[in-house]
Length: 327
Image 1 (cartoon, one colour):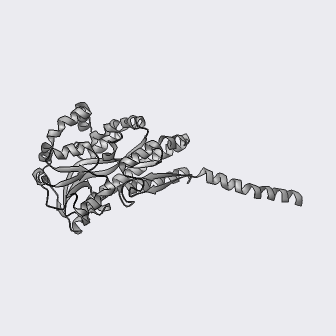
Image 2 (cartoon, rainbow, N blue to C red):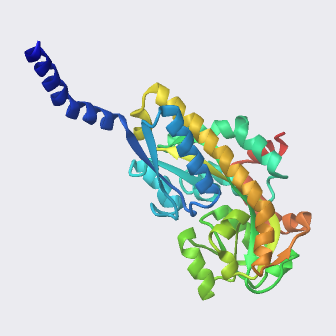
Image 3 (cartoon, rainbow, N blue to C red):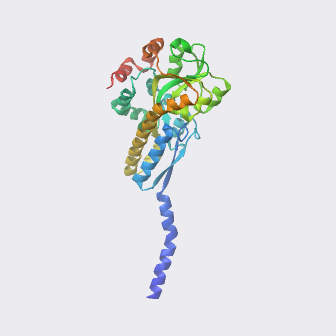
């Protein structure tokens, strides 16, 4: 009896390292990158995604976050996902057009009436149809989240009318649509990757920029910008994507968990952006920014209208009208 017990205990002892190795092998860590700090709408989305995925998988799949463009800007993140060097990314809408040109249509200023209109587009058939376009570019689209409504800031003067922008050097994202739209206003515009923007504003290389309220706060632009105009000229989504190889290596069950958790993260990014849009403006004003709360949207849209023919040629009038008519 004693000999048998000794053999059993010895067998368990020998098996323990193998058991530990199996447990470790069953836990997988995926890296997710995004351009903003963790305390931002993108960070809120990534954290909710990670927490929900851990719950759904019992901790078998962990998410390691790389905020603050640690893995690159939007364009670099998209390319990293395509190449498989980045597992997951949350890419803002204005960075997508460099890898999914058709997504550039969403960059057109004053395309969306309001947030409910934008949600109807991205949560409906139009947004769903983009899964195929992402797949064709070696990315698996998981969910549409939010970067937010974009607003103008500058260090020179209040902006209440289109002509107030003339003479300002304005940074816009790496989007030809935005470049064309603001050039139609007679603005001196140039693109610059987001990670370089704060220093460019601080040094005076650019007078102004435009971004969602949550991004303006997260990047601390109030330290280098004096005036905020609540223009809401564009809605910027943020898409959760995963590298095809990373996705294909998952079981069907875990693929479902990844998609469901990404939707949770997308909803969290929208909530954060909405809350920031309310509380953030007051905080920026308290920090010393002068806030222009109202603009004549039809007048701004009309001033940019000379760019519309180019947008229709690039994306198709039917596509633009389909988005405009979405309910």
